Image: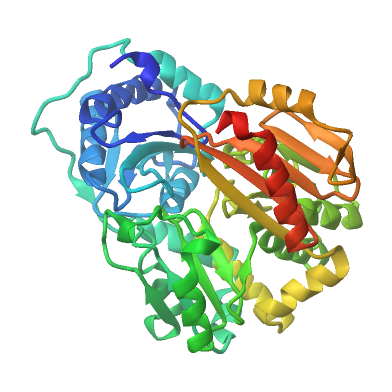
Length: 470
């Protein structure tokens, strides 16, 4: 298979198992990683104590792929640690933040069961696009150092470093003081058991915690349409909240005590509003293009700079390392704020929401109501459509921009962005985004307005003008 068939997307390299994500290609990637590490790893690691670690999720063959990667790194004379059981991506990110110079995670995150992939983490976040380009250029430059049967002994207990990290970032005493249980849908992913580890088994009602590489025959993504059982569980058991994780535990979704799904726009606004008002955090607010106007309005009210970046948490992570960033958010359930590693981290987010609930003595639905009263209602929706071939998002955006009318459903267009798909912003911050996925053959449409019918009308409009690309 040609070198050009291995490419990094929004967050890592992903492919279909036994089609393009094969043992041969994983070994090619591992050799390129080994060459990259040997070229770039510092001789003095500073506070870090080890060079590399390899982890994996619960997907089909993830442990075998991880074992091969670790073996190839070892044969290339790299000090490598292989974890002994499935973990979440935030565990591996935390290890790169605290102990290792670089970590490699075998996962395809929220993708369908037939996919697998590789994520690379440095300093607590995803490796930059510049560095992934360097790794791609190293593919097939050297023969793969692979010996069948060669193994790296697996190490246990490294996930404890992650739980210690959470305890240092969230006031778990306040969380423990909340009365009531939390319902959690693990979606058969590698976060299974994590909530119990922090809250205790008697405070957690767990759904779909078994190890199932087919993820219950669904795509392990915590979208609202996948959370009907979680909603019912929250209401039936009068839970404080419901939480859901994706396949590798970095993305999360929240359900309030009334069984209502909270959009990522609302979740991020609750956190941002809290840290600027009650923690007095200053700095710039970043969000990915697929997020909405609530964060913009919170930042505006607090006198903070606000900027949108391309979709992908790595763009927020890169900026966080270089600038004074108060808060960053991505629509796929990724949030970070000052003092945290620059990474999507579902567990830390859930614990912090519970800390806010305890600090404010408010139910989750009350926190939502507070945001709506101060910053306006938010009805945020996304539609996904399969596409038969890859779409160049820049070409698509420029073509669609030329066809735009002066008004959309009677509304004036205030701004149009084309740097990562086509985002149309109307005169009162409401918006529509049309963008091909960076990890799947899918065309995504997003919209946010103050009214459900209006949001659906804008999505209908977007679907109509994007029909030629479906």
